[in-house]
Length: 266
Image (cartoon, rainbow, N blue to C red; front, top):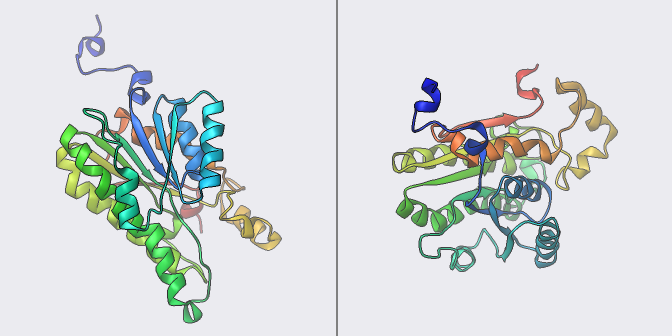
């Protein structure tokens, strides 16, 4: 018997990344990145609870994933409203079972020059992109703490680190989410909860659609990114499964950038 196999704590790589028996709540999962991550976690074995604000979009996502053979339940509520979050999360704790994995992907854009940005646009983006992660985590974490284990993944952004004109509200929210992620890691790391972030580069999604049809911006992103192209939402799945699994049990408070090398390049 090899020393590795003799170690009672050792596990093969497949079991390290397995999410079998885990229950995951994913916000903003009716489309785009949230839906892609949901499919990835389900493929790894997780039972899914999908959240979205739009009931039609949510029903379509749930039906699609069920049609692919996955165990999925929909939860329609506004992640930026405290009472709706409390009601939406209620009932997910069932005896010893509860939410083992929380992925906060809900997000919106309201672009405008900073000097002309309406307060409503500023506040809406902070509410959905930052405060919602606090509200949903606060509702879910007590169950994780009782069970002594949990994984939280916050969808950060390149704009957690850099900005550009017309997205000051988005950059402020995503910068705040980076630090909220680290604050959560510090608060709960000693009780076996790991909180990390994923910072995507420029991906082709509904939110970036206005940019992908601009030929100048399209060339700018491809020229700036060492990979020479835009990314796809499915390219975040490996990182999400890693952060949701036992393979990342000693990874905490990190923001993993998945950007084709953009931040590494001048």
